[in-house]
Length: 290
Image (cartoon, rainbow, N blue to C red; front, side, top):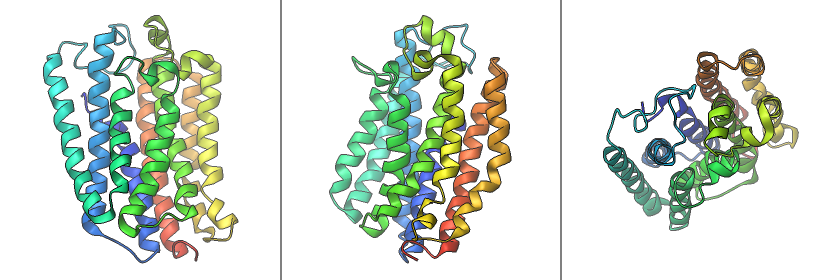
């Protein structure tokens, strides 16, 4: 429950896209791919555990929240055990990172450290950025730009512009997952003093932001084709547009917990399906510079 499995597509999807770019460039390092995938998933789980522990300590997870029960605040697991699990999970992520540093260079040290620090400081530390409305920005950066470009770099040791452009739709969809979470918890977060972006924008503004993020993902996916680097196969993710429209309708019309919990899981599924098709389109295009 504390690992929040429904959010894990945000960790898996960017590694798939980055690896498809590497394959298109005729590079594939199986162990580096596995290490990057495991590292990304472990950082996501560690972030979720840290969030569970820190929100409970700050009193943000109250009984009237609409989301699933949090294990620390709900008394299902002692706080110390959640904290130990957080340390162990991030420790395993460090082990994956150590291998990637060995094969791809010391540049990844800073990237790995920043990723873990961002996970901890989301709701932990003296000034958690998740409480200041910056959560979506950091998710876009670390589960979009950094994850896609980093997954490419560990296999190719280069960073072409396509890696950054292809990271944009991935980051937008990952951020949209957090937007659904925060629009669901808007009222309880406001009462707890948690100034998320949803609290700052209000419900109508946050619903518009969610729709804009999904639309932005579909509009930016074919950019490498429009810029002459790849082919029209990058339009493959547009096959998921009906699911995106359905989710936008749910988020726009519903305020109840079960519906928004379903939209949260649906947005994770949309991101994973979108990125699988995006990866297939990259491969069908023949890769970077084709």
